[in-house]
Image (tube, rainbow, N blue to C red; front, side, top):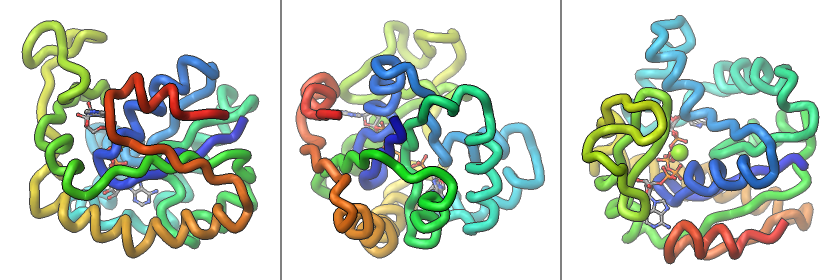
Length: 203
Ligand code: AP5
Ligand code: MG
């Protein structure tokens, strides 16, 4: 199964991708997390990406595709994968069609008014384990999985978030229309608890 999860920032893509990854035993691939990892490692790619995600802009096509190709070449992607937040613009969608045509696209639809609420509540550990309104850590400020300190993401500010939402409407909605024409999009309401949303996804 080659699955793509799309939705605006803080819509719950990562939350649902993690659950789907466990249920389907497929790797979750978040380009945002991969870029943050590169940044924390201090690589050339991470440094190049920083100026984009700190402004809420999309990272350049060549950089994103380099990272995606490298990830798809790993053994665990042989049986399929779950992309969380990729492709986000038409050139990425066209490039993915050549690399590995997706079987299904799940669009998590959340009104803009709810996104900021979710974003301000979000904390993460350096490995990307995420907490928020619907999922609180057992011990405040500490990751349940690896005991690491939780912090807010640099791009989770109202200003940058506004820009990320705008980019979603401008650049990612055309990607949804592209996949809708192929008849592979399932639109799921992203309001309610993470469990309720998970149950709505039919693959
Ligand atoms: P990325 O990291 O992908 O950020 P995003 O798309 O803005 O999405 P988020 O990770 O913010 O939200 P999410 O939908 O995963 O929600 P989550 O599950 O965390 O990308 C960051 C940046 O990297 C981009 O701006 C760009 O610069 C770059 N980038 C990434 N991909 C790229 C690409 N393809 N091309 C170019 N550049 C790219 O949930 C949010 C919060 O809400 C959490 O706290 C969670 O616990 C909580 N929550 C989740 N579900 C619920 C629920 N049902 N009820 C209540 N709370 C909930
Ligand atoms: Mg995410």
